[in-house]
Each structure stands twice: as structure tokens, then as C-alpha cells.
Length: 351
Ligand code: UDP
Ligand code: GLC
Ligand code: MN
Image (cartoon, rainbow, N blue to C red):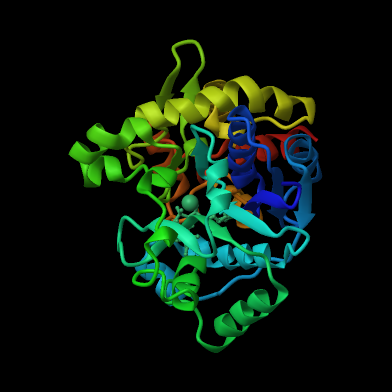
């Protein structure tokens, strides 16, 4: 069993929070397999140290990006080109079999039985069930498969611009050849099934073993009040369709991950209730001091990386308009008005 592992991926500190919760949930469910996280150099050193406390191996890999904006735009997910980085999981040949899991998945029951399945086993994608969803899959590391996948990516590209399109092209017999390679949906229950098929969710949702927070807005993009144990949406365009599932993620984050992040000097950003309160204060201060003049803000924002934001490009909004929106309680907490941005701006002035 030492040669079998659960593997996940993070290319930044925001997805790393998801990876930490996932790793913690696997441990909580008593897995006997190793835990491996693939990370890229963009992950901060402090976050890497936090990952090392949960995962057996924290490996650094290069970013593989499809750069295929045309297909990614069709999916309305311009940020997913980097998911080709997932392909590195086939190069983990120190393991004989692995289960890959997206960093936005949460394990609710022991799933070690997945190691009885063969490559490539996965659950259907809720959007196109003749394709498998690449958020959870059983595979066999192999240098040869790895190089064939890279070759396919270079020659043909991926039909969705991300890993899922490429993997479905490569393992194209999945839909028809062997039903044992179809994982039950409860091993990768995407949260969007709540509104796409509510009666089924009501009938079978309680037996879910893995929840997948598929979609642009991730659990760490919400806020959480630990006192009332309630999850809140931070802006009007992030409706909350599955508060109970988000509550499970946040419960684990609050009890096990937030204290760990604090140990390594990492705050959990605008995703926490307290940070939003702090952000409100900082923002008022910034405006009242005249810090956020248009040219200063756009200049500051142009070279900041917004690790916390769902990466959809934001339309340009003037400083005046932003101020108005703020006064109406509509600050763009996850984007230009993120706590990190404001804090950095304030720091610049304080220095
Ligand atoms: N991922 C990442 N950084 C990114 C985008 C994605 O590390 O900027 C990784 C992460 O493991 C994530 C997976 O790629 O869970 C697939 O992306 P995502 O879960 O956002 O896609 P979805 O399941 O929502 O289609
Ligand atoms: C999907 C999968 C995700 C994958 C993305 C890009 O929706 O859930 O794992 O990375 O498509 O192909
Ligand atoms: Mn995902």
C-alpha cells in the first residue's frame, strides 16, 4: 500500500487551501494510502510548509498551460489552461497506482476501495455524461503514458483547453468499453447536481463519498462565520446553492486548516468573516485618506496577483463607480477590492 497514493494539484495559494482541506478529509476518513500534492513555484514557501504537514510528499512541478483561450472562453473558465499541469501525475512512477483528486473536492467517507479499480476509472461528467469528469480518477503512473499525453497535447490540443478534454480524447474508450471503469457518481458528486437534478440529490446525496465543488466559485471564495456556523456569499454574483456542503468544507477548514495557516503566518484572506470586517475598515480608511485615486489603484492592481479571486476578467470600473458600489455594500471583495490589494496599498503609504 506504500506504493499507492492520493494525488492532488495546486498552482497557487488559493487552491492550496482546497488541497489542505482535501488532504485533511482523506486522513479524517482513515486512508491507509500516501498523500501527494503537486505544486508549482507560484505557491508561497509558507504555504508549501503548511502542505508538508498534511501531505507525505509535496512535489514541485512546472506549469503546463494550454494557452487555448478560445476553448477556455467557451467554458467561461479562462483560468483552466493551467490544469494541463495535472498531466504530471503520470510521472509519479514511484507509485504503482494512484487516485487523482481536484483540490476542490472533499472526502466524506473512506474511498480506499478505489484502488481496486483500473486505469482509467472515473465518474461521468454532469455536463456531458459520455465524458468522464477529471476531478477524480484512478490511474497508473507511467513515463510512457505521460509522454504520449504531452505529445497529444502538443499535436492536437485539448477540446476544452484543459486536462479533461485531453484525457477524454486519450482514454476515448471509457464511455463504451468497460462499465467497471465508470465510477458511481457518489465518488465525484459535483455540487451543481443540486440544481441540475434536485430530486436525485435528495434521494442519493446523503450517500455521497466525495463532493466536488465544480465551477468558477470555490468554497474558499465565500465567507464563514464560525460563531453561527453560516456560510455567506461575498457578492451578488456568487449565489449560494449548496450551503450545507459548503458548511462541511468550512467546518473542516476552520477547525483544522485555519490554525495551521496561522502557525505559518498565513492569514486566510477575504474568505473569512473577520477578514471581511477588517477589509471594510481598511477600505473606508483608504477612501477617506484619498489613497484610492484612479491612477493609483489601477497602477497598484496591474502588478498584483489576485490569488483569491475567481479568475474571470473583471470589466474596468472607475474609482468613482467603485466607491459608489462600496457605499451600496457591493465591494468587489474577491477582485480589485480584495483585502490583499488594500493592505498592500496601505502598507505602501505607511512605509
Ligand atoms: N487548479 C490549480 N490552479 C488553478 C486552476 C486549477 O491548481 O488556477 C487545479 C486544482 O487542483 C483544481 C483543478 O486544477 O481543483 C481543476 O480546476 P477546477 O477545480 O477549478 O475546475 P472545475 O472542477 O471547477 O472545472
Ligand atoms: C472539468 C473538471 C476539472 C478539469 C476542467 C478542465 O470541469 O472538473 O477537473 O480540470 O474541467 O478540463
Ligand atoms: Mn474541480
